[in-house]
Length: 175
Image (cartoon, rainbow, N blue to C red; front, side):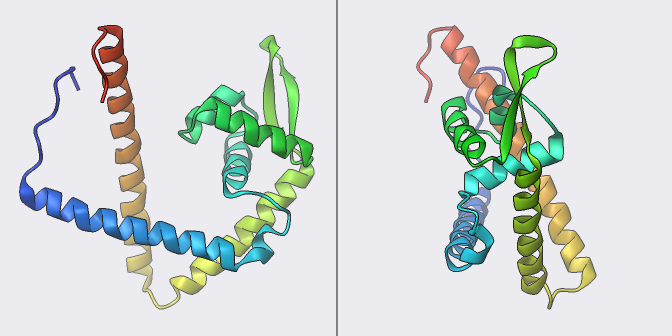
């Protein structure tokens, strides 16, 4: 994105994007309902955002709050609040950053890893039940397409953010 607005996609692409958007909203609502109707997963009183943070820390290892916010595509104030709650619950710990004593690294505690593993295990069991009637090829294709969609979405967001930053630097209105 070189600062110019991209051309509007053709009507056929917009219609397909609309249908995909509807299905993604439907999927997110179903996931939300799953969280509400399956309280045994969240017995530890962890919010969805808290689980996402534990997931990132377990997958990527210790990191600063800024890196965690970037990894989950959220603003630092939201992440800071969630991290504070996770620290209070004993699921995340802050340790001084060996490269910069003024900063802290976040990492899951053993209790945090236990909560993460328990929720992940139940999530995987539920997803396996949902996909039980699907063939291996269909499941692999779904995974490949979702992976591609997420990669492309992340790349798109980076380009949009870069374009917004360039406009702000030039003093142009963003949005």
